[in-house]
Length: 286
Image (cartoon, rainbow, N blue to C red; front, side):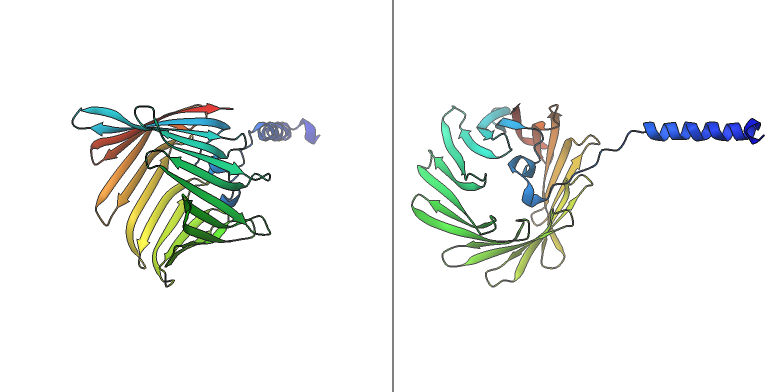
């Protein structure tokens, strides 16, 4: 009979072995890319995990002292759903330079934020207005009691901003924003007051939706600025290179330490071969 044929038995064994191997193969993790319009503040800043507080110390290198000196300290607080609620900046002596507080509507949309600048003795307020669909349509920025300017918005079907017009007292500037198929910004055009394009940006992403290339062009094809961002195979931010080609300047930002949530803890800034700045941050999670 066919069943006693050794070739038949070998075929059955191979079939069972391949079926078992297929059923035990680990499924690849599906990559979910969130459109920009639906991101909270943490996601927009590529901060991972349920963050409660970030403390960032910024240092500059003093040639006179041949060491790093503290420039300022910023402490940011976030809600449990990832939105900024407060940001306080301190000088090296621990005195408060500025304190920004963000206020929200019952539907969790930003109502306004108020920043008190103690060194300048000023108060800046930014108020958000929304259309009938619940999408932002205008922001009004006041310095003390005077209106500085407005920002007017046009949005797409999910609330993504497609036009942003900064309206000052005697002129306006307009940005046009375009998205790729995943809802990530891929092109920004800057227009003059007479609505002529004078600058535009293009943005490229990797397969995880993280920005890797940002280019700024003047006119049709003159590259004037370039930013390259590099990640490790584990998704850790490794390096950001910023080039200003108009002035032949380059800045390298290296990220040497990360926590268990893959957020960076140390940034070293190089200008040429000289270390000019560094930032050290600690992150507290819910």
